[in-house]
Image 1: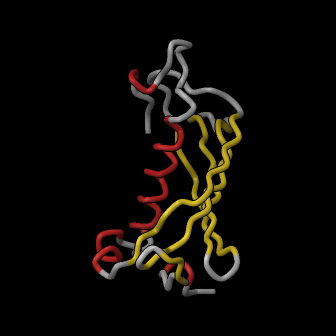
Image 2: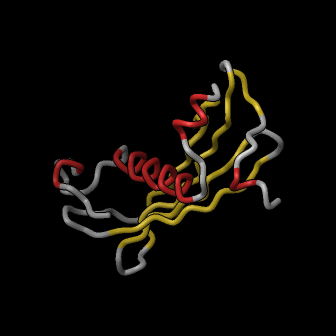
Image 3: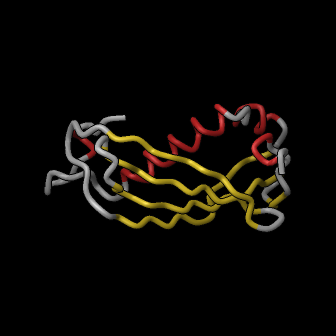
Length: 121
C-alpha cells in the first residue's frame, strides 16, 4: 500500500485515525484470502464487529511512503477473536503495532463463529 496525500495532517504525517482504515482493509483482505466472505455471512445474519482496538504508534508515515501490514488471528476464549497486526514501512521499520478484538454477532448477540480460519484448531 502507499500513503495518499489527503491521509496526512498539517504536520505532514499520516493522521492517527487513518491507521484504523489501513488495519481494517488488511483484515478484510486477510479474511477474504481465508475464505471468510462478509456478504455471505451477512446473508446468514452473522456480522463480524470490532469491539476493541489498541494501537501503539512507533513511527510516522508520510505522503507517498510505501508500507505493508501483517495479520495474524487468534481465538480469545469462546467468542472473541484477536487480530494481531503490524504496519511496516517498506524498509521493515515498525510503524504501528495493533491488536483488534472482534466478535461475531447474530441478531445483535455474540455467537461462536465457525470460520474457516479457526477450523484447523
